[in-house]
Length: 485
Ligand code: ATP
Image (tube, rainbow, N blue to C red; front, side, top):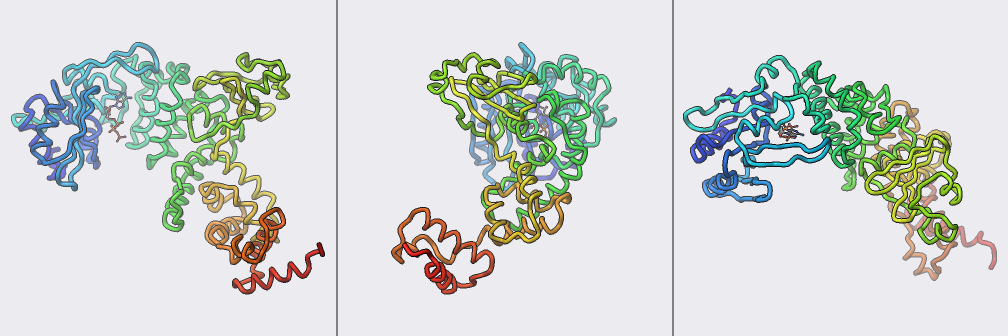
């Protein structure tokens, strides 16, 4: 097995063993991936005793730099040779959970305690680094056998309850390595689902982010759907039957966009989330999920505390009659739940999501609904649409939605070409005549000024003017035909 470790890393590990002796162990993903003959770069060392002391000694030896987190008993050493990976040193610890979904109480412990706090047997393997037994695997929980058999298995029955994020992790490893989750664990997952909603939005979002970065993300997302995870996070959240295909196209679109668009602002993770919601998820649901998972969103105020008080209602008391009085009638299927310290009011019948807190009433706004909205805009396109009209229609959309639209096989090819034309050409077109030019000609900024500027730019986009002087001629044409003042 040691033979699979690249030599420069092997040397680092030998040196750690020389310095720390029997107290230091290589752990976690690196050991797992080493045994699976897969590359891994995260070097995690567990030290029985004082990890920071060992990290400091290694830092001196490697002429490196040290980042210490005394409150966690951890330190990261960056080697003086920047071609070598960073090494994380962690003090061996014991964890006790007080309640479902909460973070554990941590105390220092032995390597066996540290391995027993881990999620799955395949992640609870350690490799000895002391020169006498370098490379010997410490396996207290049957991890080697599970790796061999391709099984994801928790270390004890309470594991998913202690930390429901492990549901995502189990599915992620199963999808990544083509493993299966032990049958007993599938039952434990089912039993844990009811408490999954107790997890904070950030923790759920982090796990989904990590899933979406996997090569086999589609398979994992579908597996989580089979387990019933999505609808547990949010009622009625479903994954489209075409998700695997959609995601493949999205990944192609990301590669394509990264190669062809020089936009600094292009965010691949936004494309992945948009694909996860697809075009089948209603806008109000995307908004509610974005709020719940603390995904990129903003709150736009609909009614202020003062306005509510003027109408004689209190928003602290979030009830149907209160909303009725404010002019927002709610249907009987409305759900009112508390998240992130505010009330989230989801009215599926009226397709509306509100958020209420600090005495104000808000609407959730998120760019993640843009792909769904684009679908509606694209439906109305006529083949005769002019470039200037395309420009106006597509300008409000974030680039990620347009990139997705341009590769969506359900959109007719000619429409996709129009979107691509906007992405590559129209969007980047610089107007021949600017506001400064008009001011230099004695025009005063105002409504007419704006209209003239747009008309000139539209003529340019539609190919009616090809140079600045043609644009000026066009401008004179306007003036000649302008009604006398
Ligand atoms: P990846 O290749 O996805 O990065 P990894 O195994 O390195 O996999 P990390 O999330 O970096 O995963 O975690 C490092 C190690 O910490 C894991 O191998 C596992 O032993 C432990 N660990 C991480 N998250 C949990 C958790 N929620 N519960 C228990 N142990 C965990």
